[in-house]
Length: 294
Image (cartoon, rainbow, N blue to C red):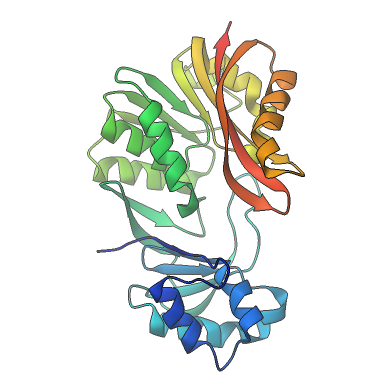
């Protein structure tokens, strides 16, 4: 069975796998270096992706080889050599150990996905948010996922609820993978994959179509908010994701609500808000759930 693992370090406490890896790295890393490494370690299917601090880059090959040896479910270890960037939200990877193939299989909540960790955006760290959104969707809804990538949110929704989901992404590689994943999960007709720009809602024939719209591009949500409003029906719901700075973590959701209300062009009722995950010092990815009146 192929699995997804996120290894994190909190106050010197590691899970059993983490302790084994940490012990194996004792001869090449200090305690402080181990902590830096473990905070940036993701496993997606059979692939490990590392974001290695500058201070450890001279040791990246031996770190990769050690991880491959110790993590029995892994076949490849990659170093993330660039941040996620560009219109397609992709990153550059460098092979450190194992097979130089960035495609793998990932399973979540009974669904199977083909993922390419270099050619299309994917984050295993959004699984809790995916579960939350699935729980909110009602049978019979039409959902528009404006930045759907390989189809994770869309397929999980359609697999669980009797609904139709439009999955839009501008990246051709993401769209290809989404189409494969729709077939694998036997959801042809339930999830409709659209390759294109989410700012061109009229061209996709989904104007006033959606009961629920997902805006999973937090760094550019304001730019696409008018498009989200255009695709959403009167009294429909928009899930508005953004990156927010907050000196106090507890303030981040309310600050996101305020920002949305200052930005939107339509009457809106806030249904709720929360932190999805921290993304940097005093920066948080948040989501505001909003019902709009047009």
